[in-house]
Length: 246
Image 1 (cartoon, rainbow, N blue to C red):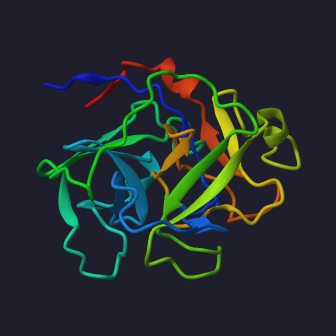
Image 2: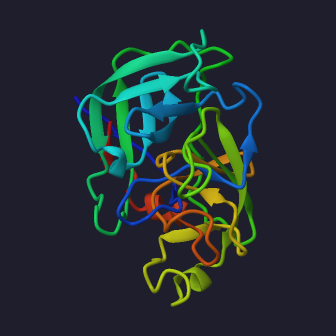
């Protein structure tokens, strides 16, 4: 029997082309090995976060093929690290109000085929306790394994970039996203460009002041000025709790 789960969570969007999945890290740097033990890598070239031993939270638009495989405990995707745990997905649960055109409620839960073995390399990322807004100017981080530039190569090792939350009204104006940004979204990037997520890390977490505040979702290309990552506010999820199921 399904249970309802509470998600006072915002949805972050990375800078991707509208035609493709995003995102990886532009303008960031490699993190210390295994310092983000909650990070998950999906075989659909997406990221995610382990929120319970059995469940990974990611973006709904990453549900592009059957038989998704999840890797936990990785720093390098190429190296045969003994810390890695690889899982088949038993159940896929897409947010019931996900809109594939607008990417509203771009959330998805993946039930792993077996519980993860929690240790120093594989561990949980706690969900936020409140659905409060994230103020403009707040410094946040996004991590992933994807491309380091829009036309560049993907990264073998986990990269992370620091981004800044940008005023919603500014982000929605004609020079930015032309009215696409709703009251349930916010933007995070760099006003001058050069710092962003790109192809390969949709579904990864946005961390602000050490709190899980969003999920990489959509954007436009990578690292362009006036095209920061787009997010759905934590308050937007507040109105849906407890309406999406495990």
